[in-house]
Image (cartoon, rainbow, N blue to C red):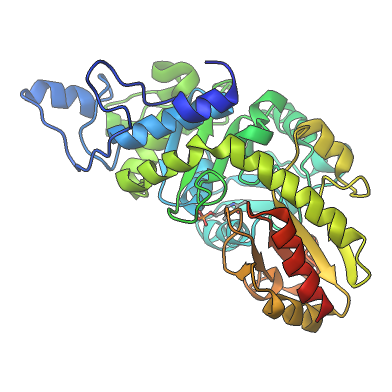
Length: 421
Ligand SMILES: *Cc1c(COP(=O)(O)O)cnc(C)c1O
């Protein structure tokens, strides 16, 4: 099983003789054992097995294995939402007093989490322009920097991250690069192939694709050397596990085993088995959906670009887009179905246009099979000041259009009639 399309359908759950063909939902919080000795081994991480669904559940486990296979990682951990994946991906290697270098063009929810909540926890962040020159990026690191964070394709500004630039800077300072790969999905970009160390997703978006289940995932690339003295959580004995040293005991999987054994145990933001089942159904058709999302979005971007009432269009698939070359490098099959654009007339014209749409719905969601629109400056990014909006490269009149899988002629007709108004 080497092609990603096949993995979408068949990786993870592999039934034996007489077992259900479709991955079952194991709706149980707990698991039966006949010996307290066996349970003790599980608690000490000396044996593998399920004992409590806050740590692991068979349905969740199958889907984690599938996503790890899609990204090319050594292991994955599903979370209740993308937000918990972002939180735990950093918290797993940072403590109060540590510092993170982060691209400024990240999703508004991630920005609040980092800039407010995690700052209050004592972790500091430096936000850098994603287009920063290598020398300036290098200068953003401090002695206490422990991670670099960026989005492959930023939500909603659609800036393509130069993954190799960020990975080289991170590795020169002995820290990992964490990449949020939500928008391209592993079908269109696999950041581990370009030097990223940890990949996260909001699975609520394309991976699910049908707007039915919130979720997040952390995937471990398994290549980073945690033993360089900067990551005591992985190299010093964990007394809550009788002195286990994660980097020694779990080698290439140390990061993801610690994320589960330590953070998921303590924070409990696990995905439910039913949501994992729904997510898996979505992933089965991910490769087909992404192809059509890209095809439809390209046609819509070209239509908008040539329309006299449109001020600007941002879509990496357009030859005129400033990130076209980076997109061709990291996402040769296309980026995603999301387009950012502005109509002439600013905020007011944007509202009029959006209220005139009939097929496309206004929802606080993106990357859905149905076409939808959102005005980031008044919704997902409304907590940001004008300066922070500028840093995140969001124009106040910017409209985020998530092109769905409907027939392209219906999508274009809807945009046409709304622009006419
Ligand atoms: C939506 C989103 C998140 C947050 O995920 P939730 O599942 O909504 O918690 C994180 N990163 C990106 C890029 C997103 O689009």
